[in-house]
Length: 116
Image (tube, rainbow, N blue to C red; front, side, top):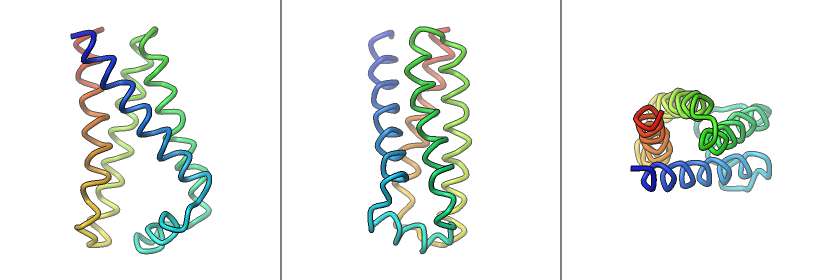
């Protein structure tokens, strides 16, 4: 069980680091996506910061489980919001992206609760 927990945590952290870096570097594809989703561009640093903190929290949670659990719960809430944003924009083809990150957050949360 501990191996599965570590694999999922590292994978979820890496996915969120990637998403945060994208928010900070603002590639053209991301700017096009947030425009379609009607998200103001000035929100990107805050959104990237939340993902970065979540990723760091997941990794710290390996040593301090309560922080990992809190980070996973926060990321789950964040990506529920991302799903709502995609649904609100009726961009159903984009649902697999936030759903993947949401799944990683929920599995991290569940495994963190089991491991604690």
